[in-house]
Image 1: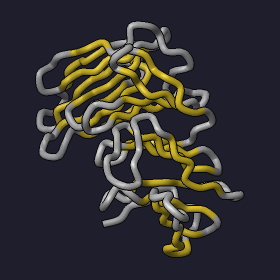
Image 2: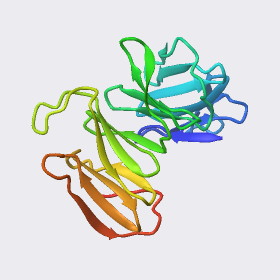
Image 3: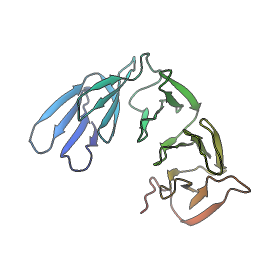
Image 4: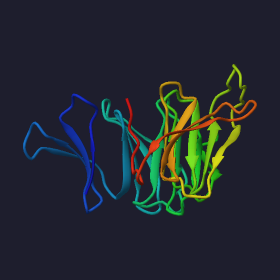
Length: 219
């Protein structure tokens, strides 16, 4: 069973059963559940937006949990998409997926297609300011720009920056959301901070020694 909690303040869960049925569960009413969809392989909840994929042939849908409206996102089936695939959504609606072959795609809502970004991707995340997509393979970090950046260092929509590479695996990466201009990551037994600004020389700082972090959290 796969579970996700509603936004703060709502005593509800979204659950995917072993029979591939998607439900909402009302914790305030024992035994109360409402069926949302059938033949679902995986899903993610982004605030009140629920995005789910059907079993093969895989089609993506978005359901607004407030209005109840459901919209079909993809018109054609997505290949290599099952319960191990990942769905990502930015705060302003940018959509990306990582399929079961670890290939990253970004959705083009004008042409209604997923475009290839990179292969062998272990993690990706949208920046809190909604302007960038961070992705990593085993040893490298990259950032793709989703909007024009009109202050230095200038960037155009679609630009991709190679950020850093290490011989040892990069174990995790997170946006430093204080300014959205730095990335936290762990490798070589250290937590590091790297800046996006590539003018002159990109700076990377060692923060502290760590042991194989699975998650990075800060305040």
